[in-house]
Length: 327
Image 1 (cartoon, rainbow, N blue to C red):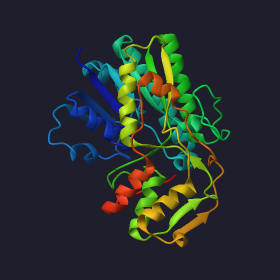
Image 2: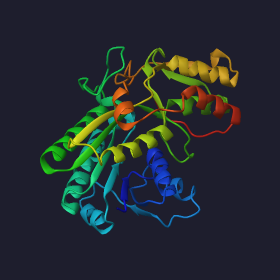
Image 3: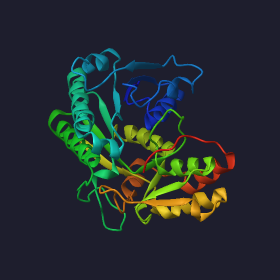
Image 4: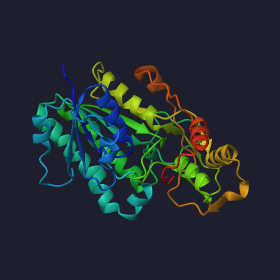
């Protein structure tokens, strides 16, 4: 059966990598993006041909947007819902907008899926490790209690609850991926892609490496290519899953402190330790966040391939500068 795919937020950081990977496999893709953050060139500039990619500039939260018609017209069978405000800082500063995009936008996608296709669509949703909040210094499993401390984490958890409700009550098949800290190659136009590439860019441009807090906070870093691989693995698993919904942690399964990350950049770039400057932590900064990926390994066949240290060494060696982002 031919698979037609819809990707919301398809011009963003993870979205554009996913779209290009799927397009290289010859699949037909419809991209929805409002282009407030993502850029069309993230897709078009990377391809010799775009005949199997349809790009629609659209705001999924706009009441005039007819999402069911788009899904029905393009005979969509798989939806990757990636559209969101992903910056923790932006969500804190504009909570109404964050709720509208991350929660109400998800609701509109869910409604469109069940109205357009009589439950023939599979939904893969990019959630976040932020739903867990601060956890003990152990790798967290999917069964761990969710207690987000940021508004961003709260919106992602609410979106998850909507998805579980629609899957249980209305027949939609869904997979939720709780993605940890993503790093990797991005074009300069993309605003947000994480602390790893921010540190690399600062090292290469002679700027200070800025750490918020004492640097002992621990994160689980996962490369964007590994995230894309898991998104695809999740869609394949949906064909054989028996439950209406399932949740997976997507990380490396390995913790790295921000100080250790900075040290790796300093060592690779042969810098002095004085280049690091510390600023006060923010109240919604999580101290410890590491994934237990046993479930994803066992069920999805997921295995992360690219480590932050490898990425740092390769980027520093190449001297290729890209725009960084926030933690």
